[in-house]
Amino acid sequence: MIDNSINTILVVDDEESILEITQEYFERKGYEVYTASNGIEAIKIVESVKIGCCFTDINMPEMDGLELAENLRKIDNTLPVIVMTGYPSLENTIRTLKNGVVDYLVKPVNLEQMELSFRRIMRERGLFVENLILREEVERKERLKALNDELLSRLEELNVLNRIMEDFSDSDSTYGIFNRVVSLGMDVVKADKVCFYIHTENTESFVPISSTDLDDSVYNGVSYELSKFFMDVISDDKPCLIAKNCGAAGLKEDIASFLVVPIKIREKPFGIVTASIMVNDDKDNVKSFTEKDIYYMSFLTQKAASAIENIALYENIYDNLFATLYAFVAALEARDSYTRRHSTRVAEVSYVLGKKMGCSEEELDVLSFAGQLHDIGKIGIRDDILLKPGKLTYEEFEKIKEHPTIGADIVGKLGLWEREQDIIRHHHEYFDGRGYPDSLKGYEISKLARILSVADSFDAMASDRAYRKKMEKDKVISIIKGCSGTQFDPAIVDVFLTIVDDVWPHDS
Image (cartoon, rainbow, N blue to C red; front, side):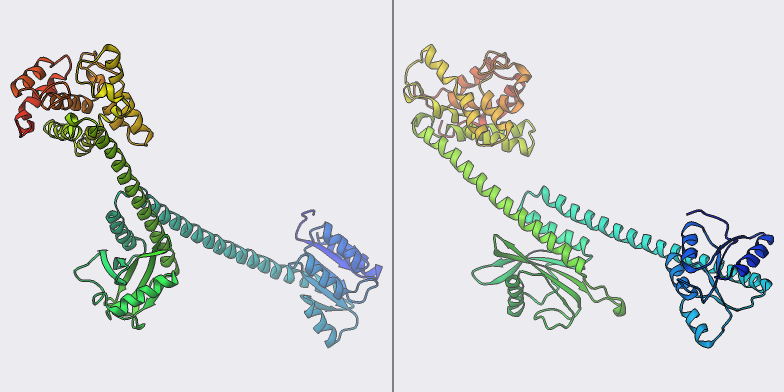
């Protein structure tokens, strides 16, 4: 559509003389004038040219003025239409107003009167268009604000959900999860008090396991009625939001809003999490939990249930795995009465030596575990070699030397950690590089493997073996001193000599 000046006039009349006179008058006044002899021609002009105002007769062939006004309003509802008629009547006046006509002129029309009407209408149109623009601007701003508010709300929701997921992603104990549910619940739903209850299946009761205030609970104890209410919530498997004085048994009167969320693990009742908002001094402005709070707490408890289940499964698998490995060691030591409890003693000596050297708790745990399993690879050595009372041949000793590699491989295949594997594999490496299986030298050997090497050799000399009795204490100390710098790390030997009296077997 061509964008012409707003001082553009369309005159529609089936009398050619009126069109000519009107066009000449307005063009002389500086207006741009278009003419049409009926409504159909007028519509074609309006569809191609920007018109400021339309003057139209009522009675015309093909499409009269009122039909034209109705069609023009569909094309451009800001285009003013002024009707001219030689047969004025109340009925026609009402009809024109209903069709959106803005003025009504009686023929014969005075041209100056047409111009005055045009100017007035254009001023009004300008105000009308300006109001439309302002209204659209206000509506646009309101839509933008609504969209922005919704975006901020979604962003806040996403941040809350991400925080909940992150907080449970590194959970390492069930008790830690209970405490996180309480602290997160307080923060996420802005509760005054949160409590985590464990469901006891035998007595159908609930025990508070973690809370913001267990000593001054928001409940008058977990009464029979309250336990029954909790069981109903678990049975429905849906959160329940209740208000003060709702009749829920056992609630104190100073609770303004009370949210109860069930926790199930593998479809079995596990517990209940409750959140409370307390009545404050401003009784007319007390917050209540919302649908979004219910959503947050439900998401929180779902993640908690998943984390609890994962930890339980992990602990069960972990315990079973350790039991299996220790059973391997027990079976191994049962093959040789002389080496019975050797692994346990090595783990104990390693722990004492590591602690004296300032190892962290984590390192001490690794030492204890690796000490218990350091010889597990001997389960792959034939009895005729492992239990041979005399001196081993070269070939037999080469076979014995495979046990660190076998042990590390067993532990690795069971999915345990690399540090333990490293100790098991390298507890027979020598500080001077003459050990096995990888001929590592000096500090290429990990510190914990160097510690366990001393403990292993010490216990081997300080206990009975298949081919000899245990050595005297002075001789053991002498040998260990003599191997300082060759088989053993000198720094570790120096520390070991300060604890040898503490770890020497009591039956010596």
